[in-house]
Length: 219
Image (tube, rainbow, N blue to C red; front, side, top):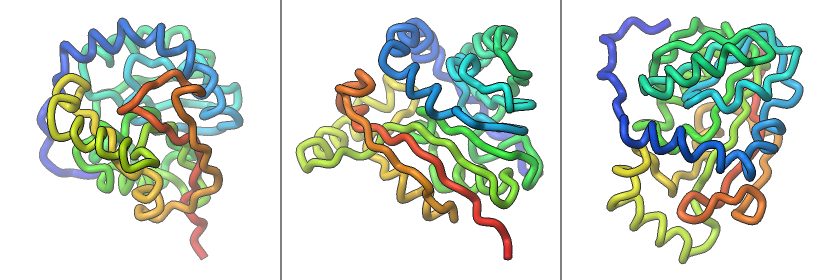
């Protein structure tokens, strides 16, 4: 674990309450993809940016423990309640993506779900996820990313430069998350691109990617 000065608290009280209220509606479109995201996981899992705990119900029986990290106090409270109903043991803790409260190589898998858009430094967050995974461990990700068309990217640039991060808990829509995952040292195993017709999530939070990446085994 790192030993730096504690980071400033993350506070998005209005967004957190709005997001919690909207989440049940969003699950109609993205719930099946949460299940796909977590299918087949086993062992000790760290979930970064757990939000209100919408993933918890989808964890399979092979998971022995989930360490769910959520920095926003209201969402963390909701996640703690969701953890009580989870089919596997879930511990909800305070923490931020670039300072994960886990030891080096202590997790079999890590989950990033609709969170890498919000972190201040995606490269630092992914370096932390790489650090806490054992060699051969897997990163599961479901994220909305940079649009595939010039017009879509233009809309995202405008949104990111104006009101979108302010009203969406620091979210930035135009990030190339797949490239950042590879830049952190992961090897992409699977990458599926989804759109509004798949998940119901409209622009600028479209398209999305769903996939897996592995921390290479040491030679």
